[in-house]
Amino acid sequence: MNADTRPLWEEELRGDAHWSGVLRRGLTLRLTAREAGANVAALFYNHEQLSERYNMADTLKAQHTAFLTAGDVCYSDMGRVLCSITADRCGWHDALCGLSDAALITARHGATRFQEQRNERFGNGRDAMLNELGKYGLGARDLVPNINFFSKVIVDDAGRLQWQSDHCAAGMYVDLRFEMDTLAIFHAGPHPLDPAPRFAPKAVTLTAWRSGPAPPQDPCRDRCPENQRGFRNTEMMFA
Amino acid sequence: MSAVLDQVVPAGEPWSGRVQRGQRFRIVDLEGNQAVDTLFYNAADTAEHYSAQDTLRVQRRLYLTSGSVLISNLGQPMLQIIADTCGRHDTLGGACSAESNTVRYALEKRPMHSCRDNFLHALHQHDLQLGKRDLPANINFFMNVPVTRAGGLEFADGISAAGRYVEMRALMDVLVLISNCPQLNNPCNGWNPTPIRLQVYAD
Image 1 (cartoon, rainbow over the protein chains, first blue to last red):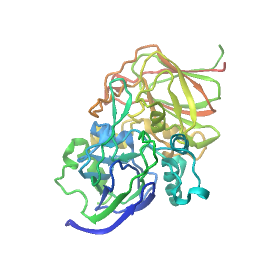
Image 2: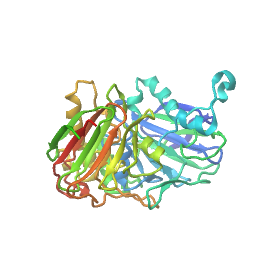
Image 3: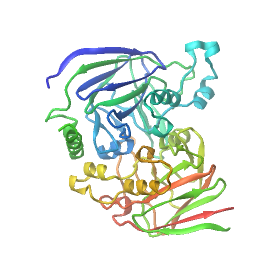
Image 4: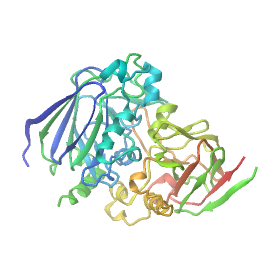
């Protein structure tokens, strides 16, 4: 399959928006931060069999990493690759810290509700994900650890999680090449450890094009023997 | 103190049971460096389960030890670790499965016994209509998975030893699911899966 980098579609997610969609095998999706300090919480499910989903532990231990960047892939819980990170202008995406929730957002930024604030009310990560999951017959039981694109948190020698400010600049992007038909769920809301006192979620742009799936020689496939086997498992499903 | 449960789980086997709010639940590493893959569910509504990321987010630390509160996917405290003679427990490493074993080690490792098979076997015994989709990221008691400042992650040799234990107090009624890990391909068990002892105290 030849790559065709002309965009098939583009969509802007305003800050705090949640979104879901099916991204077919061979499609690449670019997430672009429209402003500094963006964060996109993401979960991935096999669209054919929604019980197969992104698995934090299998992703991290197969690749001996605690964060994600170009060359890494996102593994499902079935030893297969959901998507590959084929380009990354940011360098570090958090795989550890999860979602904000209503209690955290209210404690940090104050209570809001639709009656007064209309659509400027403050959302939160868990409720955003649950709203999208509910559209596919999924719910709380399907809330598994997620990725936070564009955010960096390091683990110090004592095991403390340390938020890294000024990590994501405006215009930075990350490209996800989908290796199976994937239900993707995104929330463009603040990272749960982002200490900013003002609730100011940042917009991101989604841009999709037809790249084709991983070719025989590919930096993600060839990153490590584990990934070669993961792609082999994935390609068996499409043989 | 009165033990309402005192049971040895042999190497490589599953276990499940209930711990009531207020009870203490102790896991003893009988021979040392045994990984104990563990999940908790709200016994009244199993859609609420242990959440590794919510737990890390709330405590802002990667490792579990005395004082750690285990948080659910709905943000609620489920149990608190009240004693720990090991010092550090993992919640990043997840559970082994036939499929992940093919990725991590070799394609021919698929038939080996795994934690996910243990979990699924135990879930089916409860007739709660639970299945693989109800298996989120778990805790690995007694397992050592250090993360470096540069973001490296390795399965390191254990820091536990024979007789060390971890004890939790339940903050809600919980269903406990354990796989006494049968993994033979990495040092998580010191290459030698061994039995554990489970105790529940009613005080």
